[in-house]
Image 1 (cartoon, helix red, strand yellow):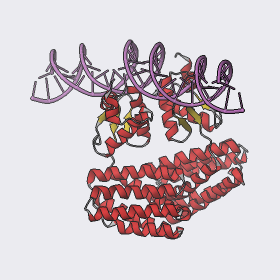
Image 2 (cartoon, chains in turn orange, blue, brown, yellow):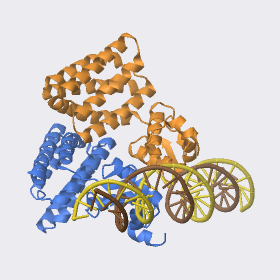
Image 3 (cartoon, chains in turn red, blue, purple, yellow):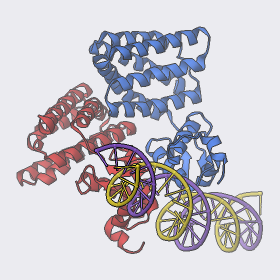
Length: 221
Length: 221
DNA sequence: TGATTGTTCTTCGTATACAATTATCGCTTA
DNA sequence: TAAGCGATAATTGTATACGAAGAACAATCA
């Protein structure tokens, strides 16, 4: 109800509900709010220093996005992504990310390719410096950028949401695959910059497939 | 605030926000709230006989689902699905519905197959009776049922949302393709009941592809 | 032990208030 | 008449309070 708000949430000019939603997503993905944790409206309102109204609106959207489960009259709890869930998500990603790669290959402007190669280069450096956190960030950035380049907002938005959930689960277990997935990323960017949609699609499929297999091992193998 | 609420929204025991969301979706898809229409909170609150709070929560979710666009400090307007949008949606559906068909073929229980064939039979009768509205309903039911049978909730939820948008756009233009799409539906159910995932996937791809082509013709051809 | 009751916590919805912003409309002026 | 300007109205964004209903859990009683 007073000035501790910007400190905790950031002094943007976005509606509070959006700031709360962003903070909530971040808190959940980071493990700050672990799966199963009860999220009472009062508690979140206090955590973020806002009233209950923006919290409630943020919770509804978080539910639609699959981050929380709301039981009527009982409130919200952080969702518990099971291995079944992660398997289901990968099944969808295996269809969508190859499509995104194909579209990206067909539509990428030279500046897009330059930008993708920039990410690859930064990742190479981060790998040399053993900065795994940074490598993971760049991994994410690369995928999201390809989604944007695809030029299909529905595809981008859906795949992005799925990708967020994958990040969430992997952060909770422990990402191991990052290092050698970069060979695949290089091939993927090469395919996109070549403009060969078929090639980009098949490389992306192999890439997501490998990630999916690794996920299976990590989560219940 | 008084007793005109259950009359307009239905006396379910769901939270009002969910009832409002359902009514809002329905109003938008039916064309009751046409694209571009301003949806002020007070107006919706009056329409549904509730206060602003449940309306606001419903609007946030409707925005996440792509039915309305919310401009900060300026309120919500019904989204305007352009031909670009519908093209983008079909591009995604062409990947997801075949996957759903494959999974359904691989997992369908005998009761599922019976249920699907029941829908087909009802559709045959409705077609004989020239009941086009009913045919459209059954069309929708068949697709949604296959999504359920796929057993992948993420896939089902995403594809369902996309399908709703397709229905919306087609209702606004005028569905013509319904009659001869039922040959394809029969083939699809046959493929699913045969348990042949490859076949089901390719039939579904052809089916969505045909719908996509028809959509292109209708919307800007 | 097992069923019932009662207490407490929380959500859900309503109502209200008010600041900030945006839209509207009439008025002035060129 | 057309354009620009300013006052006014309408709407959102946020906060707060309150009552009702439901769920969980403990205490009571048969």
